[in-house]
Length: 265
Length: 265
DNA sequence: CGCCGCATTGAGAGGTTTCAACAGACGTGG
DNA sequence: CCACGTCTGTTGAAACCTCTCAATGCGGCG
Image (cartoon, rainbow over all chains, first blue to last red; front, side, top):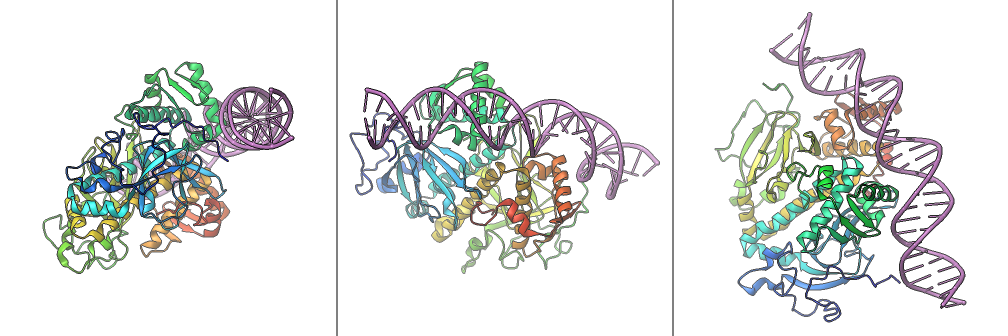
């Protein structure tokens, strides 16, 4: 039903999707040691330890096909996911029935933290392309935290970082449209850089509509922004392919002195 | 230097500000048992326990005078505060040097969670009136979590709730201005209700300018919104005194079916 | 009394949204 | 293989909303 020829662009380099096809929970070979994301994953410091004891923090892997949701609506969470390949958007339904995008999640990002507390939420993590996640049981995490106190702070930091990300998104909301778009481009570029890819040239996994929703504007306005930035020569965007040509200009626009604007995690 | 005739409106009923003036850390009489907020405080489930052992989770109290900040800028946090009386705004400086309000915190709310993760943030929690906070050391919290595993989830839930609050704020950003203001009024009303006060009639601790910043608009626009809502008769707002006359209308405006809009914590 | 911070109000300018038509890519099915 | 529908993205023009700038009012405090 859904197209699935989408390339797993973010599959950790060195692994082969077709070679190790599914492994949907069951086996215990979910070692983080062999993972190409090892040094880029947000839970790297939690799973890496001398005693192999908690290597099984990752209890399985799941494939999430494009356009489907990682969790069910209103699901009280007993597990978290770490994005292994692909990308996700966090979206929530408003009263009019349309979806609002609250965030994008790339490989190494934890998804599901917000669902720990919620009774009757309507958030959804939707795969923007065919994706894969590593599954962590929340019970395992709390066990680990109990037994290795130094891991507690690591996990709290991850949650706190999520909080800061959300604040940053709120913060962007008050800026003029151009600045929001520039900030978005820089943010996603930064994400790519941290994953070891070029931050100058990359492919967007999300639609114009998703971008518009995320930066609080409309599909049409995003299209016009792309035009404007292309015309200025500061970017070269064709369809979903992005090239950032004048990073300094964008930084100036977004006011991201790295000092003033809350850090975009 | 600062005016201080502001009434401690939110001082827990039954306690007397003048009678027990400062107690700025030192003593150990910070029992939550006697606190009038006991059943309304977000950390109630964490401090309440059979063994008195962790009664000293609260290590002190601090007075924060109006317009001053609870934490220093860029301060890496080794402690958290719970608002005991008064109100705070969370604000961050943008590139132009002006402050953007990201949230308001009332008695029972935890402040400082975002600072756990941050190196070089520029968030500030500023007291909107003379306020008092209970101080918790982060080390004590992690100790507690290590020794009483069931407390772990409680704390994670508090953090997760903060995350959801931030998402909700982002979510509001995409709504039309009137809806954002209606949502703000309902939210602050709900806060009052949960503290045992009327959600129909209350006094705002924040300025028009702060409200404007929070709902991503200007002081002038807030003033016009107040006018419009007053004219419709759905509210009666004079200065900082608020009376919500037609809650259903506001709910309809904000689309808060309590089902669709992410819960406003 | 006068200053200062906060709030109200007005009118014009400007930016965004809306609505709509159109174009291109893609997959399906004939 | 081509036609078609759908999804996505582009573009235009008009309407609307919100901001900006500025003048004015109000109240507390020195």
